[in-house]
Image 1 (tube, rainbow, N blue to C red):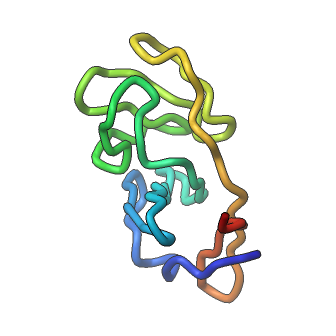
Image 2: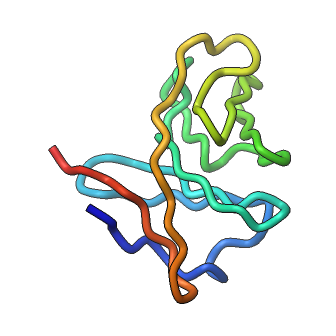
Length: 104
């Protein structure tokens, strides 16, 4: 099911926005080139919000311990993280950002 998250202009390029769907926190990321990504807003190394981290091209870095994750796949690209985070499909239509998300 596609869930509306925000308008495309609600997130600045190179930034992330934390959203909650029920009790689940998701980071919506707009890369410097304007592409949108969605991933779990919790570093797999610890209970740290990735949306507070640093966006660099197609990666996001956890601000606490420096673990980097691919925005495309959720795979960890550096230690101390070694487990991936879940990613979600993002749809952009008519200036609105949606993610494909199935609530449990």
